[in-house]
Amino acid sequence: MTELRLETRALSRRFGALVALQQIDFKLVAGARHALIGPNGAGKTTFINLLAGALPPSRGSVLLKGEDITAKTQAERVKLGIARTFQINRLFRGLSVLENVCISVAERIGAAPNMFHPVGRRKDVIEESMHLLEVLKLAPDAPRRVSELPYGRQRLVEIAIAIGLKPDVLLLDEPAAGVPSAESHIILDAIEHLPEQIAILIIEHDMDLVFRFAKRVTVMVGGALFAEGTPRDIENNPEVRAVYLGQAGRG
Amino acid sequence: MNSKAASVESTPAAGRLDQEAARALIRRHHLRWWEALPWLAAAAFYFAFPDYLGFGTTLMITILFALSLDLALGYAGIITLGHAAFFGAGAYTVGLLAFHNIWTEPITSLVLAALAGAAIGLASGLVLLRTQGLTLLMLTLCTMALLQEAANMAHDYTGGFDGLPSLDIAPVFGRFEFNPLYPDTQYLYTLAILFVCFVFIRTLVYSPFGQSLTGIRENLLRMHAVGAPVRRRLVVCYTLSAAIAGIAGGLWAQTNAYVNLSALDLDRAATVLIILILGGYGRLYGAFAGAVVYLTLEHFLARFYPTAWQLGLGLLLVLVALYARNGILGLGEVVWRRFRPRRAT
Image (cartoon, rainbow over all chains, first blue to last red; front, side, top):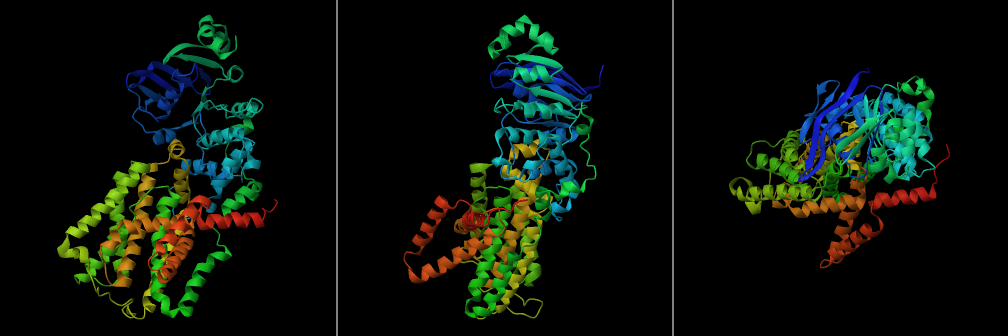
């Protein structure tokens, strides 16, 4: 059994009367390639928000490497190794691609609070950021303003910013959402080439992507875990097919 | 899986830092030739317009005040309509100390003015910066209104509505007196203070800290998601901005030798906001361009159309709001790009 990275125990979240998530017991191991699927409104993004610390849970706990981090803020969790991307791009749109990544790298290595030396003096930050862009094949776009990039490449910048934090656990919220299908292979390639030891949880609607990438799949329906297994198990599970895959157009 | 991709460690590769984007970032803070222009202009102004040194002094104080606002609003995206609170705090610090004959040495007085501005910036920032947008705007406005009312009510100390007239400020370095008829000293002293503060602000905005402020402005949620202590950064920025506004207020009190409630007025806060937007916010030099254009227009329009000069300024602002969202500097950038296409790499 591989080392446990992220775990939730009876994690629940209500929004007023609406129970968005109930009693989620979930485990993510080191090096995991785990997909979270489910119909719209199943609570997938809420789950990511709870894991990342963007939302507090109503009940239950989140553990990172066995340590309870339920009370930790989002920023503290980032320092502990949890990074996320957003379903809708949240980028520094007015800045260059390189700067987008530099902000993330500078924050991780603790260069960001410096007020008295120019950004250009931190060549280590710039070098690492450029390297990261090369790995994600974004280097040619480095000088461009993010808002000028095509949407698919903006999604890559989302991932680059998260990778700049060198996370142990990476939460990808629909990384290919809004990307034309002709370009979605760029995203998939990038994800497939991420460092192996990172535990990755990915929410995705694109079933081709899920079945190609994931080693385990969890199905969430109506705020509760519905099924979990290998992609093959899930594909052949008649109940899952009934509630989800049928609707998603892959019969 | 791919083992090369697995190491995001920086392996030495000089080529990476030679690429266009990296070079641009490494050189971004380098001085450009045109950055000498404002200072050359200020020196030339001193010799060319000896009769207008009072105007020049006001202009530079306004520039400094607008720069302080640019740090908070233009760089960190803190929406405020109450920046005169800090200007007033600095002005009243200098005014009260001088009026009650406690302390009149100008430079240390300015340090105290900065501390007063910073203290109020820190105290209000810790509360206000939990909010955003319109709520933040209203709360900054309220802070300023409260301070103004406090200054009004503490009549025994502040002179209330009448203010503190004829302040006696000691000579600079014990030698150079502030003479209201020949404001040479005021002009050069203000120029020196402006320069020092500008160097500080310029260093700050090109630093990683400044970059993270820009990040907060561009995307707050993402800054949280990269683990930045967003609120702490905002409070630090707001406090520094308040300190500089305090210095501007202190200069204003010293060079005019009086303080009154107008230092804390909404009119002052709104004017500096207009000046910054007119010049172009988040651009460092927008404060210069905006203040020069606004005050010059105000000066001449008021002279030629004493009854309707505000109409001219109003029209100008409408034009800027409609056609030049990024202000005068933004307009300049557009023109510059059109006539100088980017060099191929």
